[in-house]
Amino acid sequence: MAGEIIKTDGIVLAIHPWSRTSHIVTWLTPDHGCVTTLVKGAVRPKSAFLGQYDLFYTCDLLYYARARGDLHALRETTPRNLRDGLRGRWRETALAGYAAGLVKDLAPANGESSAWFSFLDSLLTRLESTGGSQLVATASGGTRSCASALIELVRLEMDILRLAGWSPDFSGMDKSADWTPFAIDHGRCGEGTRTVRLSPRTVAVLTRPDAPNHAHETVEDAVRFLGVFLSYHLDTPPDVRRSLVALLTSP
Image (cartoon, rainbow, N blue to C red; front, side, top):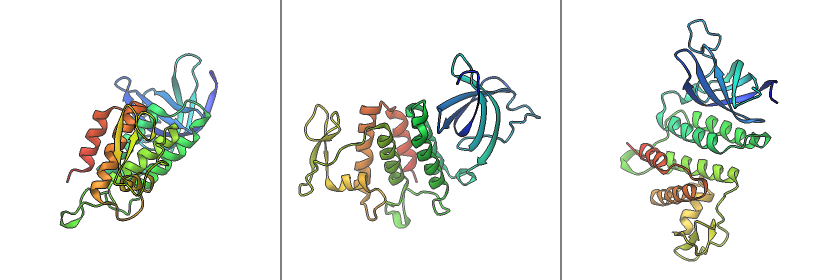
């Protein structure tokens, strides 16, 4: 691949300044995993790249693969999906940014990334088209809404765990009991060095987040469980996630 001109699709995961006029852009591609490109002169007034990429855009991508290092030279990019529906909707944008960070850290750097690309593309499309209104933390009258950002967070993280090969195994759940011990370290029901209690209702949220009538307290239990599980198995930064949850549940 080194020394070649690569043509592929790309979703923008991150943009960082390189100099006063240049950017470093990280993309998720379906066939080369995460790719980092240098965009020289990106913000110059007459740059051909102005308006051609931004966070969460899906673009046609053309870059020169360097023989050394992992910073490639962007040759051309054309936006195909700008996802304008995410702009100004802060809960959806926060979830999209969190997902992009997880994908950036976890997606494989080869052709196996196609499933990750499909996941992120579908997620961003879903967040953009949530009925024309923001995901909400509370419904009218102060009652917590279960068609909420927390439900979307549960769905997002369960998909990430599946893609990473770390889906929790709930097959040993005793549905007649109030709760069943779950060994975080083993990833299945039973006792372990890190054990938590899981109720059948919490497992229902984790396995069927889109089902109606989940109690808000149970959704919160599912969110707490996933925080512990992801931190243990995927070494995700807990402070980032705590800040996200606080943001999603703020009025």
